[in-house]
Amino acid sequence: MSKAKENSNQIFDAIVIGAGISGMYQLYSLRKLGKSVKVVEAGSDVGGTWYWNRYPGCRFDSESYSYAYSFSKDLLEEWDWTEHFSPQPETLKYLQYVAKKFDLKKDIQFNAKVKTANYDSKKTRWVVRTEEGDTFESTFLITAIGALSSPYVPEFKGKDSFRGKSWHTSQWPKESVDLSTKRVGVIGTGATAVQMITEISKDVGELYVFQLKPEYCVPLGNRKIDADTQKDIKKRYPEIFKKCKNSFGSFLHDFDERSALDVPPEERERFYEELWGQPGFGLWLGNFHDILTNQEANDTVSEFVRKKIKEQVDDPVIAEKLCPKDHGFGTRRVPLESGYYKAYNRPNVHLIDITENPIENITPSGIQTKESNIDLDLIIYATGFDAITGAFKNIEITGEEGQSLEEKWKDGPSTYLGLQTQGFPNFFTLVGPHNGSTFCNIPRCIEQNVEWVSECVKYMSDNGFSKIETEKKAEEEWTQHVYEVAEPSLLMKTDSWFVGANIPGKKRNFLMYAGGSPTYRAKCEEIVENGYEGFKLS
Ligand code: NAP
Image 1 (cartoon, helix red, strand yellow):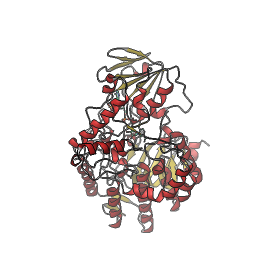
Image 2 (cartoon, helix red, strand yellow; image 1 turned 180 degrees about the vertical axis):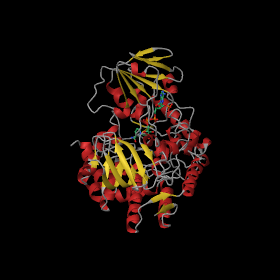
Image 3 (spheres, rainbow, N blue to C red; image 1 turned 120 degrees about the vertical axis):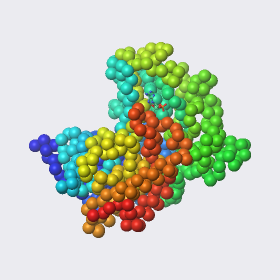
Image 4 (tube, protein in one colour; image 1 turned 135 degrees about the vertical axis):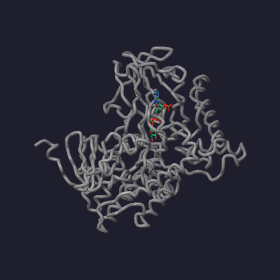
């Protein structure tokens, strides 16, 4: 009997799509309630983001110990992070360790890509079909498909004619790639490219970076964790998680209550210097509270970072090209760097500003720009993702009346708490659009999302309910609240994946939740306390 046939029509309490950080914890958490769960995962192992993104230089931008799962004291005690910002291979090992410790893999179907997920009103069940031919049915459907998991590669003219190799950063081969004699082109300069360019520039033949908009990159400040620090971290875990719980983005950094404009210029400059010297997101998320809402306040820090960029780059013409001018610091995701700017001081690293010298087409031998033809052996697309809603479009999801989710969200997502959408009963979207976890040190908010969903499932079992759906009014109010909270933010006014502006044809909408994690969590708790206000339980 074929494997697909063997797996056909199995019925579970819940199907979880994706075995990354959220899917793994959702499985653990529902299993603890005694529920039967099947996780369906496209990759051949657990890890999600940290399984797919294995490009050189890939590592955390969050402090490792603030990113770890917090639900198991044993796990916290057993696992030693070796660096303050863990590199991808170590993170993947950590997630494999978690899967082994909690025996998760027995309920995960790997190498299985979900093609359709349809709510069958007669059966009152979700029916999930994979590209490989399996069918699973369940009472609940939970997506754990990641916010940045649908790669975007622009349609450059002639793209398929290239005779060398090419891939998107999230499709970096598992086997090692020797670039030491290669001519490599990287398109894009976002957070991914910043990490990767820094790493590959150390051992590449020639590197050509094709840049549209430069970013404001801040030093990561990574270090090894020594034995004493390790002990101290383990002792301080409760304090670390408490701090994350109370901060705006669930990071170890939180905004300063002062306005950038109320502080004398010399003091402000000293504060920026201090934040610049801190590891991680200090300058972004530990800064004056108004740098992301007040243009004048933002200008002060933007100018500070531009000055820092220029100090690191030898050639003033290149330095100028690396300085963002059309948007303010922190209004797009801030890349953290470990030698990115200095990479441009190497003779084999070449910056091509494609706002001045656009890519005309990809040729069989490389990239043709307006001014020159650059021969390449490899083209790496560091061109980002169809963020937050993109991964939903890769699955044909239909709800109660056969309504298509893609159709429903074509002009922008509409959700209640970023966790449910009306017309799709018993369907939960972990890290979904307009969910608090989208602007967050993600595992911290993933744990909140997962625990909220599990608590809801338990509440339903305990009280004899089998169906939960969002009320239209609650969804409208939440969606409006999301936009109202985002409105004063400079993030809203800047082009980035936060608003879908990176994908041609995608309607501009704020896709995240800008109210901060504590507010989001409080709202979720309040709704539960009020008997799942805004949801219809039957
Ligand atoms: P990204 O920030 O969206 O950057 C994509 C890059 O491709 C941008 O420089 C963009 O330029 C460029 N691009 C897009 N279309 C192009 C075109 N047609 N021609 C030339 N260039 C084009 O994507 P990313 O760097 O993959 O990062 C995505 C997110 O992943 C980050 O924001 C972050 O949240 C996450 N990430 C996290 C970590 C971490 O935690 N350690 C590391 C890496 C990434 P324009 O911006 O000018 O359009």
